[in-house]
Image (cartoon, rainbow, N blue to C red; front, side, top):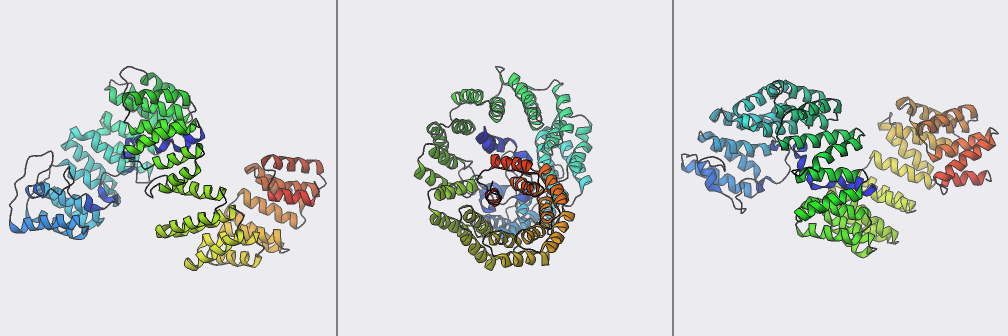
Length: 595
């Protein structure tokens, strides 16, 4: 189930169901082009008539004093928005809202103002909206993110209480919006406290308790979420709400290593004649995540028969086909997904995997290269594309592709330099990697990650002066950089006779990060190089207890050999062989001791 475990979370279904957790109700965090959202009818044309009359889709027309000045402001604001001139559009809407006591226009001005991220401007627009429409619950809910930015937590509680008082029928929507904002707070205790302080929660409102349980689950506070869910399940609640609670309870069970209970819980409900397709989909997902591929496929095939155009079901069936190594069947499902528009922008990547399974390497390369940069699979696709080129010996072509990526994504150029250099190291081209680090450092002088990475490859090229120079450059500006301290100390003790210096660097690294297994290995090795075999054995054994690393084991084997404990040394080296018989350090060590 490795593949399924890696990609199940990519299903668009779950992105949609959990949107409340990651998308703020307020548009403050929106990064899409505002010009495309400033007033569109269903066919995509600008609808200025609604703006002039203050009409919204769910309210009666609101007459406005159609003065020339007001009409000018609104029409010009719309034109500016269409052209992407956001600042002008916001300013004109603010002026229009001040001219007329129109709730619709004030609401519009506030919504557009959110794109500015100017807290003062947003505050003013919300105040104007509240002034002309004091009983509109929406204005109170739109204040929530603004109050959270100010860390006015008491104000958030009061504001939400007022909104729910004005529009109790909107309780579920408003509470979902609130939890969406609170999930971004980064302070679980404060977020959950605010939920508990709501009048609706204290009054025992089911919607409030459910929202509280979902937020607790998001923050991994399962000991809080589970009792709330269990208490709600004991009540007489509508079937749809019960299903949502069961789904949430199953998620808690799954996350707390109780997968069997999660599956049983959902199975009992999903097998009922009136079970919703959403609940059955969750059941199939749980089965797939926990290794029951055949059972999962049966669930998804039933859903497919009922609705062959459901993209989530197609996606799940495609993943199962890949898991079962059936590339041709996977292509069928992902092809259908592409025909439907592939809103999740993932199908091309999985088509590439399918063609790779079918050994159609050229076709796979085309699919991987076609994955759009906006896709959540973009990086994985580029990595696979480059790896496949390397496997065919086309290193230069792979490098050329990385260079194109670097030029097309200048904001990520540094990461592409690091990626290409690591790629070269992995393909036994250390000199090319060293040269590339030098090129990158000309563009990003003094970058710690580049300096540290170049030091590592310089060591493999016996360029010890560069190793020392680069690591000291880091330490001059960051004397408490434990990684650089350890790397310099280990290199000095392993490649030179400057063991006292090395000891100082390594012990300083351990002071900063006690019990780090790599630093303990370095300390054991410097003791070995100084002739203190007892301390060497002590710290190497400590490192291995924390992490079963092949190089730690090889080092301990050498120390034991020098102590005369030859049989245990051989056992250590045999253990290392089982982990990786081709490991360079192991091979070099065995050669030195003729083992």
